[in-house]
Length: 277
Length: 320
Picture (spheres, each protein chain N blue to C red):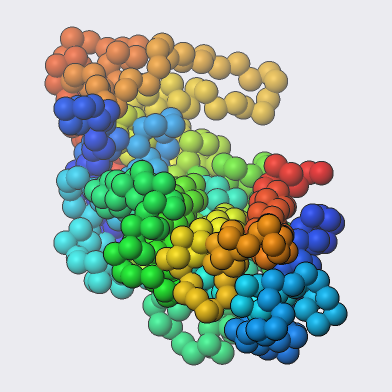
C-alpha cells in the first residue's frame, strides 16, 4: 500500500485531480458558510445581471445569486454521484461475486439479466425508471444506481474469475471456511482495485446523467439548485445573461473531467504493467 | 497391524469432457479406481507423470473436489458420507500444502492473518490465545514474529512454503497432503523444506501423503510409494523394495530415468514410446499396454487387478 501512495504522489494528474475534487467536496460540505447568499433568495431589483461585487458570477431571471446556486448545486451533484455509485457498486459487487464464483446457471442468469440492462442506452433507461417512479432527487439516485449495476457486475465478475482458481481459495476451503467467508474475506480484497477505478469513473457518468435528467425536468426539482436544472433554465436567457449558462457548465465540466482523469490515473497506477517504470 | 489412518477404496473422479452444443460429450477419467492405504505416522508418496491424476487424488481425499465414486475412510469413517457441516469439522484433521507458494497465500492478507484464519474458522481460543499460537507456529517453521505483519509478496518462495506449512499445521492435523510442495523451489531450498517437513513429522506425529513427480525427492522422504499411471495405481510397495526391485514395467521405466550422480555409471535406460494416452479415451485392458515393452495379447483385453506379489508389494500387471 505504501508503494501505491508513493506512485500516486508521483502522478501529477492524479494529485491535481485529487486537489480539485477535495476543493469541490469542501465547497459542497461547507456550502452554507461559503455561499454569499441563500441560493433560493430572490433579489427582484437585480435580475439577469452580470458579474459584480455583490454577485460575483451574476444573477438569474429571478435575481438569485449564481455563485451560491452553483456551490449548492455541487452538493446535489456530489450527493447524487456518490450515493448512486454506492448503490451500483454494492449490488454490482454482490452480483459479480456470485456470478463469478458459482458460475453455471447463477452466472448465466445474472449475466443475461445484466445484458438486458446493458442493452438500453444509459440515459434512456434512467429516464424510463424516473418516469415510472416519479421525478425527485432520491428517485434520480435510484435510477442512476440501477443503470450502473451491470458495469460493476462485469468488472467484479472478471476480477473474481481471475483469482477464484488460485490455490489460496482452495486452501481456505481446505481449512473449512464457509462460502461467505471465502467470498468476502479471500476473494473480495482482491477485486477492490478494479472496483475503485470503476467507481471513480462511474461517479462522473452519474453526475452527467443527473444533470441530463434535471435538464429535462425529471431530476432535482426547482427551486432546489442543480447544475443541469440551471442550464435548462438558462436556455431562454442566454442572450441576455450568458453567465447563467456558462458558469454551471464550467462547474460541471471541471468536476466530471476531474473524476475521469482521476479514475484513469488510478487505473494506471494500479496496473502492474506500469509498475516497472 | 495398526488401524489405517486413511483408506481409499476404488476412488474415481470423472470430469465432464468437451461440452458441445448438444450437451457434454464423454468424460475425462482423471482418477479411475485408486486404492490406497495410509497408516498413522508414515509417509506415503504418490508418483507419476503430470496428468496421471495424482493431484486430483489428493484433492478428492480432502473433498476439495467431489469424487465421482468410491470410499474414503478416515480413521474408519467414510468422509464422503459426511454433510457439509460435519466435513468442516473433519477438516481440522486433514490439511494440505500446495505446490505454488506464490498462488497459495492471499496477496491481500498479512502472514499473521493467514495463519490465524484456520483458528478463527474453527473457533479456537480467544484473540490473545490465537496470537500466541500463531507466534509459536511461525517460529516452529523457522521464521520470526516480526514476519507476521508482512504481506506474502515480501517473502521468497522457500519462506512462503514455510508459511504454507505453518498454516496447514496450526490446526494440529493428523494427515497432511503435500501436493508437490517442493517442485517450485530451487534444489537447495528443496532440501531445507524437506528436512523441515521431516522434523515436523516427528514433532507432531504427522502422517504425510506426499504427491510428487520427483523420484529422488520421493526416495528421500517416503516410507512407502504408490506409482500412478493414467488414473490408476499400478504398483505400491515400501520404498526399499520398490526402488530396488521394481516389478511393473512402467515403474521400471520410470526408475531408469532417474539420473545417478556418477559419470562412470552406465544404465540401460528403458525408453517408453509414445505419449501418455488421453484420460478421455483410455486404452482397453491394461491402460499401459500401448507403451509397454513386454505387452502380450491378454494385456489388450483384460484389466489387471492390483495383487500382492510379495509381502506388502502390490502390482497390477498380468505378467509378473
